[in-house]
Length: 297
Image (cartoon, rainbow, N blue to C red; front, side, top):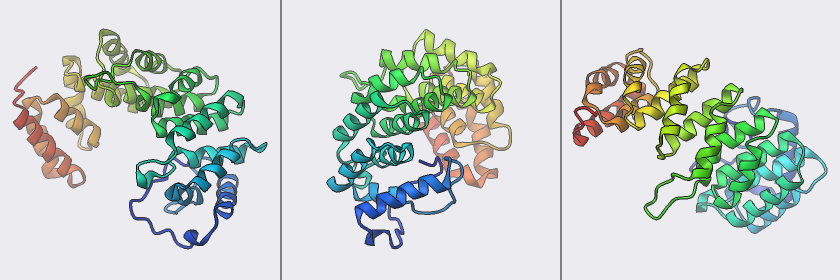
């Protein structure tokens, strides 16, 4: 599944609605085989596997599940990619059945490229039933498999009665991945642990502080955002520097909003007035800080 593929709310599906499920599966497999890795797909385009996910029917589920058992790894990848967001229009269809099929497929799978797609799919499905498989795959020898785990691990975190996601097993796995030798794995683990989870502990803060000195630029930025979300004063100056840099992503702006500290209002006002692409985000952050009333933490 290409990283750049986006699910359209009201897509122009072209002639794909005219095709049968078997024809669409064949086309999805052909696209996977011919277009190559996740960064090589042309954009924009509407892919056959997205049409299959758009339909989300029992026929599509059966076809994708069957593909998971094929001898050809490309076919197995296509099956996992279809199950990843099956029935997204309806909020997800056949979720439990899809997770069961993916978990069973992972037990029998040895190809890292297929395991990568399975891990991505389990993250997309977001069911706690897939968590044990993701925990196992988090220590896989192939960096691409660990990367896929890091991108979606937060989605399978158990929540307590108060709705908190301080899931000790998910946190422990992220604490391993956040120190991974691969840049992309550390980057996504830092984002997952720091931003996607609300959990907080001395161990989490220590791990995020370590990443403030990471050789990978994006990982350092994610560490700042994660610490800012927890209002950790060690992140104040780095976050201020990011905001003052002249080109600010929405992540840093949201981190300032989460912190709620009035010291960010002036620089956010400058961003609002000088960076049209994120002016709305900056305005929302200013409003959040003022309404929250955090002068300092």
